[in-house]
Amino acid sequence: MRLARASVTKTCTLLGVSRAAVSKVMTAYVNRGKMSTAMRNSGRKPNLNERNRCTLKRIVIKNHRTTAAKVTEEHDIYLEGPFSTETV
Image (cartoon, rainbow, N blue to C red; front, side):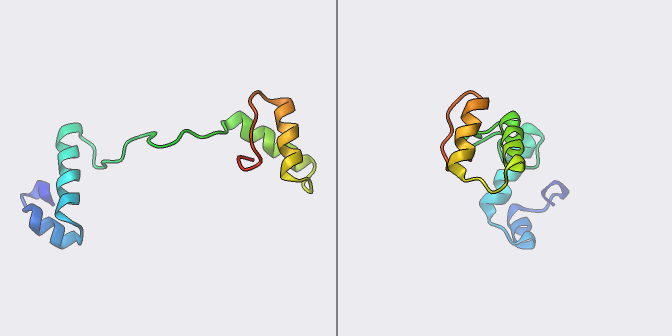
């Protein structure tokens, strides 16, 4: 809408968002050519990579009635790096 020469105030009223949100998105679009202000890969990195997830899946499928502590213990045998039971 802003590209159609509508004012920031009119755009935020039509969309039901704040003026700051409209301004932020439009600035990001003009500067970077993106319609979203979200950064890629922002936040905390995941503790488990795809290989670790596959290993955990295999362990649980093998014995689906096992406890989290035993899964963690078996996981540490197969792969590097200790993981807590909360991670598993």
